[in-house]
Amino acid sequence: MDEHDRLLSPAGVEALRTALSSAGFTSNGIAGRLGSQATGGVARNDFRAALRATEDRDPLATLIRVFICDQTESEAVVAAALAPLTVEEALAGGLVERHGDGLRAGVDLEPYGDEWWVLADVPASARPGKPLHAEHVLGIGGATQTLIGATVRRPVETALDLGTGSGVQALHLATHARRVTATDVSERALRFAATTAALNGQDWELLRGDLVAPVAGRRFDLVVSNPPFVVGPGTTTHVYRDSGRVGDAIGAELAAAAPHLLTEGGTMQYLANWVHVTGEEWDERVAGWFAGTRLDAWVIQREVADPMAYVNLWLTDVGEAADPQRMAAWLDWFDAHKVEAIGFGIVSLRRAGHDEPVVRVEDLRQRVEPPMGDHIAAWFDRQDWLRVRDSETLLATRYRAAEGLQLRQEATMGDEGWAVDRQVLAMPRGLRWSEEIDPLVLALVGGADGRLPLRDQLALLAAAHDVTPDELTEAAGPIVAHLVERGIIEPVAD
Image 1: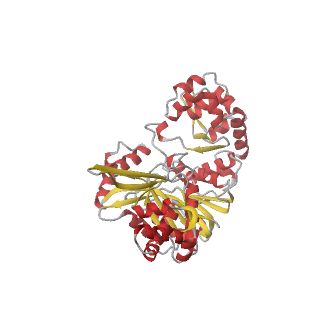
Image 2: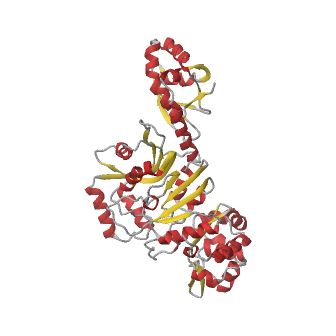
Image 3: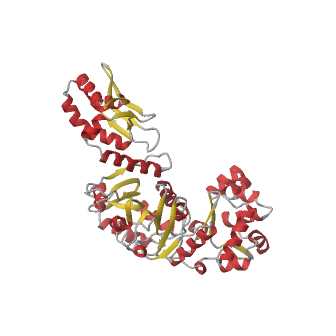
């Protein structure tokens, strides 16, 4: 995009950066000014303590009151806080707007970390009763943070942000990609993204168009997307939420596009919703998205909602909660298509160049140790390790149980004392998997101390459990591969 497509002129962006930096309008600066109690209150939309801490109206106090607490302040104090950016420039760019006898925030100007600022539209929760613009531009929400945390952060040459919105994902991509391209169907969103990029001293290629259309024929090392994934009848009222596709088709569409977007070894990660249909296995349905793509795929379901809760969530998100007709039509569509629930999660794809890709679709709703992107990268690394090792190589390898691995047992008291009913291996760190196991697998993992090759370990287990080594060896291959994939046991390098 050209410079004139930003919310502010180049000189205006520079002036705004100067004002924000000079005032200390950063996450750390705000927290230092407000203190822990007021900062915690702000996180809950309770601004009382923050307003008491900013009564003196110095530049930082004024910026906090206007852009954090959504207060209307006099033009004189706002002018002093924004200087050298003039009030006229701020009004022309929509940064502030006239309200009553003063000025208030026209956009959501949010300090992000201690180095960045993100510009977006003021959220619906801050202006109850005010309809959202059809091209409303989201700021930093829960889904945004989920994708940020899940993205694999390894150095790449080229990265693409599909549906960039305010540009938050692109900000992060620029920290480990030499060149960043960002697209959006909304011209309004691209203006916000262009301003966010300029305000933070970054330079992205910004292109307008629907999903992958603007980059047709191009390939990237890393692609991320927080698309308009909301599931429904295909009605479009707000572009950040509604793709115009029926049901969960946008997730399948992105999967189909991935092979043509990725360089060899490239990764694509996106957020998606998918339907749980009565009489179908949801994981098989989603796995079907990747048939024929020749991509490794790992889909992690993080949340599941029933249709009523789902519709309520998204109607409230845009201030439409009081529209019974819209709600009824949406719920009727779910009923007609036998949708009993809607899942939300993360799709991670990798172009590994193999004819037999690995596809895993699974539920992972436990709290995980951040950042999830590191665990996703390690999962793909383990697939690479397993893929080039045949049964003989697996048997010749030494393994060590994961650090901190725990055994949890459930037992019932009977006439002869405690009888163990269930044994579970639990990982207290990382993805915190729990795996129910039988006594033989427990013995295998318990003996994985890195000293003996698996073949020798199995020979000892066979003797102890009165089975032949060949029988145990044949059964152990898939089990060991699964334990390695989960990270429950780790290969020891020679």
